[in-house]
Amino acid sequence: MTFTIIVLPGDGIGPEVTHAARQVLDAAAAQTGIEITYKERLIGGCAIDRLGTALDEATLAECQQADAVLLGAVGGPKWDDPTAPVRPEQGLLALRKGLGVFANLRPVRVYPVLVDASPLRPERLQGVDLLVVRELTGGLYFGEPKGRLRQDGREGAVDSLVYWDYEIERVVDLAFQLAAGRRGRLASVDKANVLETSRLWRQIVQQVSRRYPQVQVEHVLVDTAAMRLVTSPAAFDVIVTENMFGDILTDEAAVLAGSMGLLPSASLGGRGGGLYEPIHGSAPDIAGQGIANPLGAILSAALLLRYALKQEKAARAVEQAVERALQEGCRTRDLGGSLSTRAMTDAVLDRLSLED
Ligand code: NAI
Ligand code: MG
Image 1 (tube, rainbow, N blue to C red):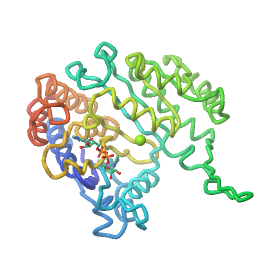
Image 2 (image 1 turned 90 degrees about the horizontal axis):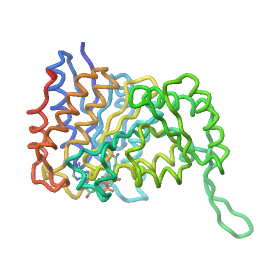
Image 3 (image 1 turned 135 degrees about the horizontal axis):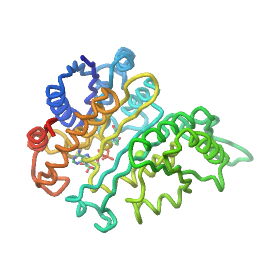
Image 4 (image 1 turned 180 degrees about the vertical axis):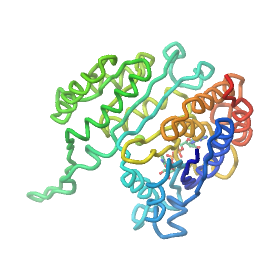
C-alpha cells in the first residue's frame, strides 16, 4: 500500500518538528510494510515570501487529492503587520476550508511522570485522558451578518451565531463514533439555558444518541464544563462542542498536559484524509535552535496513522514509544530537561516497536 502525504512545514519551528514527525512516520511505515510518499510544499509566511500568497491554489489542490496533510505551524514577527494585505493564518484558514475539515480533535493525556509539569495539583491529574471534538467550520466565526453598525452617532459591531442541523449532526455523529471506540462517554457542551443554537444542538445530540445506545451522553453547560475541566478533568472521556466554546475549552484542556509542545491535533471531515498538526505555534523565540519539543508533531503523526491511513497498530506503537521515552526521563527544555529536538526524536525512534 502506498500513501501520499503533503507536508507543509511552515514557519519557525514548523520545519524542525515536521522533520521529526516524518522520521517517526518512516520508521513506523517500514515496520508496518506500508509505503509513504511525501511532497513538501509552502504555507504561511514562507509562502508569502516566495509566492506572494499564504497558500497557493496548486498546493491546496494537491492537499485535497492526498491521503493526508501534515502541517507544522505558520506565522512569526516578520509577517505580524496587521495592515499587511496577506497574513500567514490566511493559509491555514484557506486550507481548513478547502479540505472541508469540520471537526477538530484534540486528545489530552496527562502522563503520570509529567504530573509535576502542570499547574494543577497532581492528584487531580491522575488518569486524565480526554478528547475534545470542536466544530470547526460553522458558528460565530463564520456567521453572517458581521461587521460594524452605525446609528445615531454611535458605533456598534455585530457577529452572528448561526448553526444548521446538518452542521451539528455531522460533528456530533463523529463524536459519538469516537466515544464508542473509547470509554463510551460523551459530554456535549452548550449554553442551552440562553442560546437558541444550543437548544438546536441539544435536540440533534438527542436524535443522534439513539444510534449509539452504547454511549452514555451528558449535556453540560459551557461554564460548568470550564470549571470541571480543572476540578475533575479525569471524569471526561469525549467532549463535543461548537466552534467558539471549543476554541476556548481546547486551550484550557491543553494546560492540563503541562506543555503546548506535547499536544497533537487532527482535523477531520470532508472527503480527504484530514489535516494533522501540533497545537503549538511557530515559537519564533526558539526557532532554529534545534530545541523544540517534537512530541506534539510526532503524536500528530500517530493520529495521521490512525485516522487517515487506518494503521491503528502503528499509531499505538508511536504513542507507546513517546510514553516510554517520557517515562524513562527523556525531556526537552520545555519539560525541564535538556534534550535537543533530534535527541528526543531519536529517543522515540529507539523505543518504536510494532512487535508488542
Ligand atoms: P507558540 O505556540 O508559538 O509559543 C508559545 C510558547 O510556547 C513559546 O514560548 C514557545 O517557545 C513555546 N513552545 C511552543 N511550541 C513549543 C515546542 N514544540 N517546544 C518547546 N516550546 C514550545 O505561540 P505564540 O508565541 O503565541 O505564537 C507564535 C507565532 O505562532 C505567532 O505568529 C502565531 O500567530 C503563530 N501561531 C500559529 C499557530 C498555527 O500555525 N497553528 C497556532 C498558534 C500560534
Ligand atoms: Mg485558540
